[in-house]
Amino acid sequence: MSDAPVLRIRNVRKQFGDHVALDGVDLDVHEGEVVTVIGPSGSGKSTLVRCVHQLESIDGGAMYLDGELLGYEMRRGHLRPLPDRRLAAQRGRMGMVFQQFNLFAHWSVLRNVIEAQVTVHGRSPEEARKEALRLLERVGLSGKADAHPRMLSGGQQQRVAIARALATNPRIMLFDEPTSALDPELVDEVLSVVLDLARGGMTMIIVTHEMSFAREVADRCVFMEEGRVVETGTPKEIFDNPASPRLRAFLSRFSGRAAHISDERPLEEETTS
Ligand SMILES: Nc1ncnc2c1ncn2[C@@H]1O[C@H](COP(=O)(O)OP(=O)(O)OP(=O)(O)O)[C@@H](O)[C@H]1O
Image 1 (cartoon, rainbow, N blue to C red):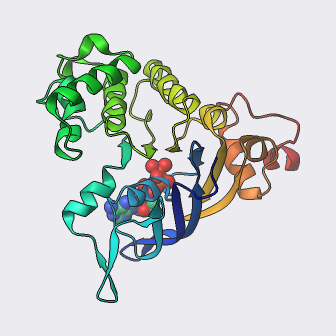
Image 2: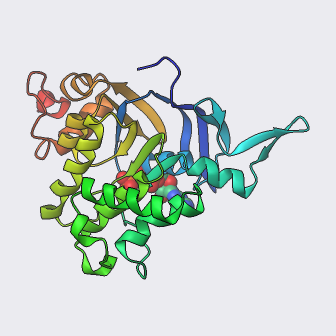
């Protein structure tokens, strides 16, 4: 990993009305690093990745992609929002995968994976088609290029969404709970594609409620609560030796599902009962 992070997040604040969703978040993500973000519902996980992808503006702090300020530029001595074209170009250097797939329903799978390559990145339709077919094969869907999203299972649609996000050669992939809209039997096929990307060296932030996956895939894991990063560490530190009582309490709620949580160090509730 190189020293300069791919993504640098500094003291980022985000409010919705009076509600503070992000309260001074700092995070660096380095080349090839996989960071999983866990935390209770409403802790700001989705807001964080949505802000990185410029789907939400921030109210304070700054974010940099490869050292370039995201969303703003300095003009005549003042910070101003980037014009739409430059904002689109910045967003095109990140791939985002949503809970709800967000595919274009009236387009074929192939066109869904081709489109941004042509419109945002200026590839020729032939080049984009070749890349789309390669990526569909990578996510195990080469036979579905001509299908429409409604003909696919949720797991297959999510894999198309991953292929689409990869198609622009993003510097970083952002996953916002990619399996939470799926039936349980379809979760693994999506997680194994994400795991495969991680092993291939893709830089990623993954927001997830799948605790054993969050542990398995991560180089580093971040625990958020009330809009703040409460604890960050290796998966072993986070899951086997959680320092903060809040993280221990959170993990204990998942202990039934998180098969890999070790019992070397009992969780708080267990020690007090
Ligand atoms: N567009 C919005 N308008 C108003 N409030 C919002 C909006 N988006 C998020 N919030 C609020 O900001 C807080 C953080 O939400 P966020 O979705 O980031 O949490 P989360 O940790 O991802 O939760 P979950 O795990 O349930 O998805 C919540 O209180 C939420 O209600």
